[in-house]
Image (cartoon, rainbow, N blue to C red; front, side):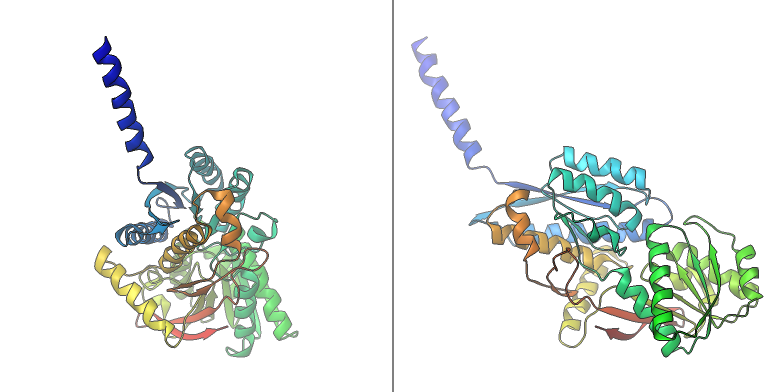
Length: 380
């Protein structure tokens, strides 16, 4: 008995000593649609999140002088608001230290309340609907320009540079599609009060047949059609526009502005017929950082960046930077540091305004030539 009583305390002491020296595990949740029509964008995001986590661990990232280990907790919301809130609660229950996501405004907005109630910081790399950061949730941030800038800039560009006088508008009724379409109309009317909005039509995010709405639009002979929605719908829509002989220019926001659009639309994408904007952009010396990221991504995953991957990567790195600044990964401790963070990312400098929107968010305008997404200009 005496021998046992001496051994047991020693074993316990060793166990507790081992526990005390254990490496801190920091769980970062990531949510995007990795199934469904936008899965190519969701997987692009998830790949970038994995890449960021691996880079942090490879360089031995330290918080308060101690090397920590980051772990990604990926979830699929299938671009569905109900599934989005379900996985948000799942991440809260898993006690993640922060969340990067969601991709769609329609899933990001309802999920943001769940993260706010739990006090968990959230950075969206893609959601552009202004409502997301107008809810006064101090946990909500984004690293891309919102629809007020995105849609408004496209509206002004349509009537200014493209000289559109008669415009038809289609949206997919999602929070993103409807929001960016509304801001586009406001921007066009502000820049050219005499512009005619000759038609407003609606579809949905899973639609494949647009003949009825396009036939109605054709009869109004517009110079330009603006579509608020994603590339998975915009590509087939362009094909059907060509089949109906519609010659109008085609324009959309970042959801349309992807590398795959050229394949989805085929030869209907035309030459300089499509204009779209990506909610971010770099110029000059910063371009090398973006080019290097894209090259590393392609080497790692054997595919091109689809759209939001650089913003996902920067969102993870920005969150980690705030933790380092705060010397803590505890959400309540590092959240104030996230609000005042300054991080130089591959997408440019990142800091947030009082609402959690990125300061001085840029836009990049693109067109398509030879079926390839082609950069035109960056607008600050």
